Length: 493
Image (cartoon, rainbow, N blue to C red; front, side, top):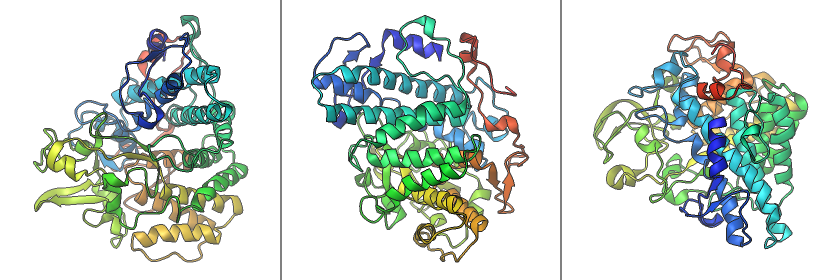
């Protein structure tokens, strides 16, 4: 972290946008903690800067054809990288503290956090903002800071908790803070403060909305209830409370698309079941996943490189119910294009037809939260909180199954229902950066061969590697440990 703090001391915020309405547009404005600015545009520039790193969940990393999303999928054992240079290290669990992906996640999230800290410090000083505007701006910043930290603690465990702009190098060598303390003192309080502000349920430009705040709170409490914090029943109830608020809007504000293919139409970005997405467009920031998930050098697109950097394992594909619509051709996966057989299953979720056939500039967004995710959060959390599935929990699971053209479930007991919910999370949210985090918080892994759930510790993946205590956390990047004497390494690295 020291490396990036030094960078931001000289250039605290290079704004990612000129206004909140177009936060992907480049702006030459440079703002620091000492800047004497008073205009509404300057306030909005501080706000816009917090989104500059939100693409950390899907950005280039790990060498040729690498993407940060791939790290989470490789770790799960459900995907291969084929020609991706870093894939085998995570498939076979031989990764170390110098891995590209690890460094990119650490760098990007802390840059985002530091920008949020500066915005939290500066926005209240703008007299041109009325109280409503200030509260709305600060709610956005707090939600984004919570999001960045939520990823950090799940991936690395105890991490430095930085809550103020760094004013000098004397404050750089921050020690690690326990995970529970970060949840209790930053992530949850930030989100509870943001929750008080009546933001719109949906923002058509992709900025923080009430929908994101509720979805993130539901996810945070669901994770907090499980490992490693094990907060239990009260946290499950809090998760169910927030997710239900969104579930109640599933036929109005956030309706499910009738067809899976509607999710890959650029016109549907930030609509329908999409709650919060990373914004991509044709001019400022293209979606890098489109060429990454194409079969290697298949010659089916205009892209110079078809990377084959993230490919589903056949064992995972075969673990679906054979009647599941999601594995039918060009639903979630594809096996041929324009009559050319591709020799396997490939991910269809970022198949931007115009980019592939014409201009190589994919504008499809990447979803951090969409309604089926929240529906399944509610089903799991309410089942745990109440000791058995209620009618709404069964309904939402059956709605997801119905879209997949699967028969409805009956009256399952708590444990059987929970495993059905986990199954649907695997199949519905596949390759969206969710499965790995589910494994960590439940300490369970779906065995694609037996179709049963193994304990995380001791699970042997399809690459022949066995999960251990070490596997639960990623290593702190080596360069950070070397430059910060107060930063200890995770066990085993």
